[in-house]
Amino acid sequence: MEATILELLAARAAASTICPSEAARAVGGDNWRDLMEPARRAARRLVDAGEVQITQRGSVVDPSNAKGPIRIRKVR
Image (tube, rainbow, N blue to C red; front, side, top):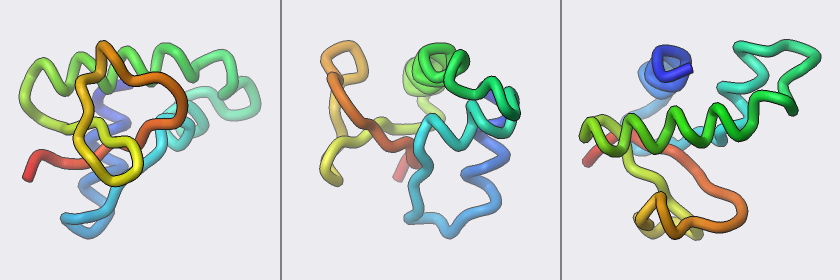
């Protein structure tokens, strides 16, 4: 899942974000909804590795406190 997130971000403009659902869809196809939490966990692992940031409403947030919709972007 982490590789998929990084691949999706690499294919976008530097300032672009993705939704965890995009990674879940890429990995899970029709069963993507089952992969939403694994996608969010993968994003948190990438935050811990210093590779991405998680945002809400355009602001970087602490992934352990993020509730609701999130976006993932490359570290700036």
